[in-house]
Image 1 (cartoon, rainbow, N blue to C red):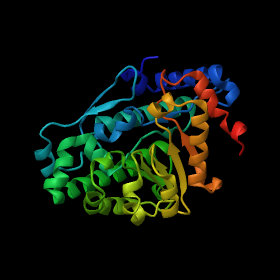
Image 2 (image 1 turned 180 degrees about the horizontal axis):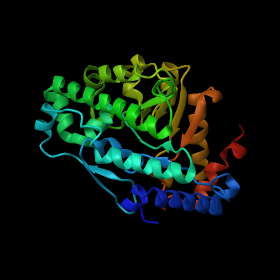
Image 3 (image 1 turned 90 degrees about the vertical axis):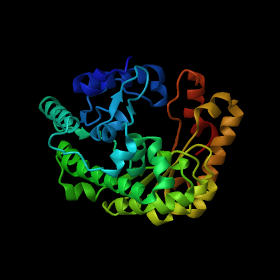
Length: 320
């Protein structure tokens, strides 16, 4: 498989690749409940740039490595662009037009598609678009950094209301009443104090735009930021590897928690160490009904099929 631009931007090619992946998963791990013997098309539009739809909307070039997810090239002259930042015109955006054309094609062939736009969050998008220059601005020009974050948040709302809702065929009010979330992947490059002073005010504004359950994705170590996030009142926490799940549960006793095992750790663990880690994660994040997932993301050939099988059979081996 090669994840070229066509595989992402051609909606029919994207569906065919998705079907192939799900069949292959079933052939390899169907007895574990993975994949599908007869997968059916899942029409989605807006995923033409992977996690980088918003970066592309802001004008970043998106690069398509054949063996990975799309990635952006941050804009040049970042400081000047940040000082004069305005949201691009949505009606003339080639990124938006491609998503809407693909949505129309999918609707004609398969019926109403879903939206695959990955919005990220204000901080994610600011770092994607402006790179290290934005992080530098957080330290040297905090007011400018807050203005950039606000513009990033407003752009997400605009794309959500005028593009994602149109793709899904749903009213804006209904969509805003549903489940929503924010990604803060680069936050660990800022101190908790800097996050609270610069990013959090925009995150709070962003969170108030939606009435449904709110998911906070923090894929780094959560511990130092747990108190800073209290103002967001998240109903769901998606926490990075090596986060102290016991501390998270103490701070958020009613939140659903998902947690990750990172690939380097998993690759070197013996079977008994895997079992001990899984038991500790479940005990620390308990009660069980508030644990949504334990995830292993982006596993490659360094994780053997036998280790996949060992993890997937843990509930039977360790007890519910």
